[in-house]
Length: 291
Ligand SMILES: [Zn+2]
Image (cartoon, rainbow, N blue to C red; front, side, top):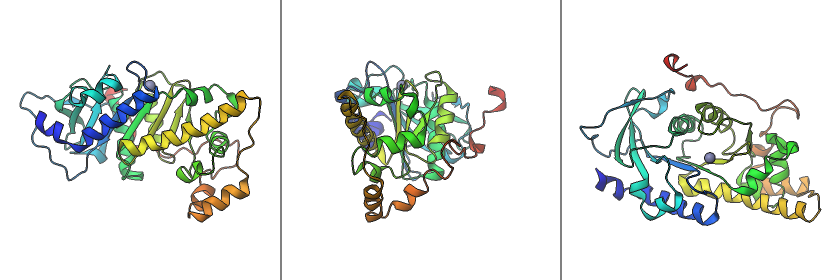
């Protein structure tokens, strides 16, 4: 089974992204975690006979029978880059989606595994091409959450994504903002799954960022776009300039050229001050025996 793990191309992609996260200084110590949902058609063989299922505290009906790669608890990004099979575990969700079983590699998953699974379950519904989740701690993005005026998805998106003319083309729906939850809590993951239904990048208050993408490289691409915008924003603020950003006419012309204007106009359907729409969360109710 370990040979199966090391032969997975997805493992190499996770290692490459971990190397980049470490080089960027975004994953200090053991901060951050990644997961990668393998295709439904992927069969990696039976579980070891010694493997015992672990019951899940969340309902993930759209992940029944699926395999996932997940970084281990207490692992460093730089160590995963050097030896991915030691830092990443392969897991299978049971056919009734009520438990998971370790198959190979690291057998101590991140404490945020249930949160990742809740998000993957949502992605299967709303953005099935987004197969990966990357959570990390970019300092410039954490710093943004210290500004009370940016603690709102619409204001944050309009301010940040007007700092560079291509940023909104990558993220026409904008960036999400999530208030404080204790790190590693299941509530943080469940809340994130709701926010990520509409927008693939989410800032966590005083904590970091999480992105979904087509593989870990796709998620990292989006984080780099947002971080570049934040770099421009903080450079101007540090110089004493209040950035006005790209003119709205120019922004719309860019989006229109690439057929993304409708997505931008639909991103925030409610008037300013009326908060984020809250999609239904029926697939992510806690099990009664864990409440
Ligand atoms: Zn974190």
